[in-house]
Image 1 (cartoon, rainbow, N blue to C red):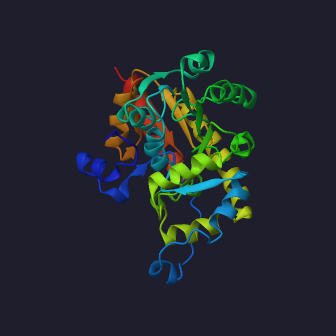
Image 2 (cartoon, rainbow, N blue to C red; image 1 turned 90 degrees about the vertical axis):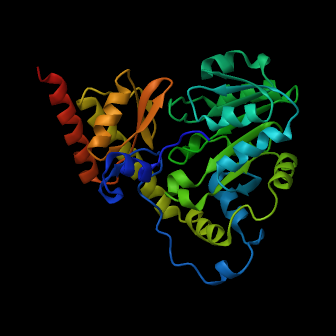
Length: 332
């Protein structure tokens, strides 16, 4: 299994710091979580039902015509490669490593390349996988460029897969409205924006025929009853969506400014995180962990991803830690 952020209990054991004393910035999950209300007893007692209204609410939220609920976009990432014969697959790099891992494991020929190379050499591939905005590299794409890529792939039976796990803060950039086109597959995650990663919920927007094939592959009850109930309420809470988007953009700007003030201007980022590429990434990661601050370390390339602190106290704590590191480097 590949490494992911959020391994707080492991860090607590490794550094001897109780879990409750950590500032966990290792994920891109929004710390401003949607307030899940008490759940009715019935959602625990009955099997989930597909006609509970969740899909209709989700289609309205994402602007998609057809959606399939899945157990987080990870479930779709693992299942989609099984729906194609051996293909030439180009996957954005650096990016979420599970994409390339899933396609390789299913026997496809995979190349992990920068987005600019993938978009310039579309004819080499049957499937191209992009992440928009990219995690952790922050790449963003013009709609026309993405649709031109899709058109070139679909003309010969290919797919363009766009992972929009971090798109909720900028919904106007989503391709969900175009996802009824054959060969265009958009993945959405509910865990990042709504702060509900533990619910393991997401959606696939695509042509109905592909969604039906994916449904058959995944089997029944992809989401639990409690998850479906809570997610339906969250997707319909328009006032909270507006508040959360404003908070994310402000918190992201604050984090970017803080990192820049301490000599670590972000290499890239989005509303949910900032990414700093540096040969010093590992030493800074360890030094912060020794102070109870967990970041996400990448080795290829050497870099750190900083998630958003939940409040001003967390932001000040990170600033104080980075300041102490600066003083240490300046000491003779």
